[in-house]
Image 1: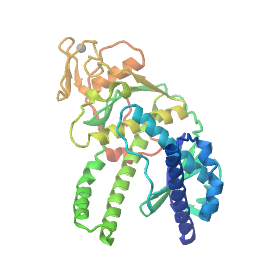
Image 2 (image 1 turned 60 degrees about the horizontal axis):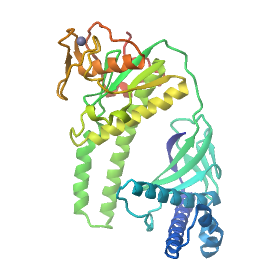
Image 3 (image 1 turned 30 degrees about the vertical axis):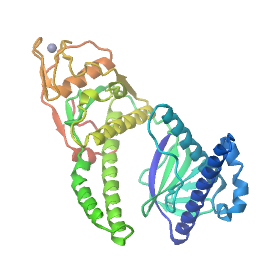
Image 4 (image 1 turned 60 degrees about the vertical axis):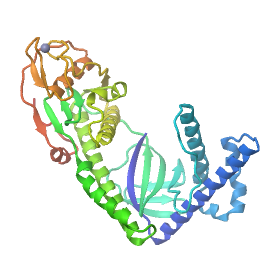
Length: 394
Ligand SMILES: [Zn+2]
């Protein structure tokens, strides 16, 4: 299942209806939660369908529920139950999580049209929602698979449709080529073709702007217009950063999937990202998230294109010499692999990418001709066309 997020532009009338519908969902969420708490106090065990069966009578208590498509109301119940289940699961794991909250005005932000109640007209950029009406939708990418659900989400003053669809496979012609990728902090990716792709530092570049805005925010009074304005500024910066990074990750993963039959990567779940240099500065979390996202994009794009994404055990991919197989110990700061046993010397991450490739393709270590890495900038990746060719011919 793939999610696509598109901005939608409700007019005055549909905006009013969306706001009313969301608030009715909020009311239902609170009401069901209240009923659940009451039941616990009285020692009654409720199940999902018990609370679902309460909805018709609650419509009599609050006729505004009739403004919402019935399946959406059921999803309010379903979402509440799944967050409770998530809560009890993580409690069992000993994590400290808060209770499910009653939501104040404006704090219910998502409506879930599951399977029915919506119609997407991709040619005319219109989204029809039952009980709401037609809303203009800006689709930068068309959906090919079968559409399963549409979530309507409010983020500040902006509205989005998150459309979930099954991916329809579109096999690509074989290229006869395979590649190994090493993701890292210094370069985002180093591959066995000798490309070193620059790390996107979009978030870091705008970190100053965010910090500035947050200082301003701290000086404003709560509830003031000015505060609201600054909050929106911050949201905008975050949205732009996310968009740019996603664009980069989409294009980079697309380039690899289009050009290689087999793509070998480390299984980072196993490694826990440890050798990648944990705790290296405040932006670490961002990189971890980008890597996971990149691997996720690679995996679904590969699947739909009929390519193989091969995940290998990350043990010793950095330490082993990819030319002779000896273990050559390195610190995080050692950027160069220099093998005292066979004399092979190259970029540390390039050596790792070769080990990942050899493990994935089940090939023995072998000497290789040394050549300098080819630097690929973020700008170059962003400028890539969809049907991109490799960074450089071999
Ligand atoms: Zn060696």
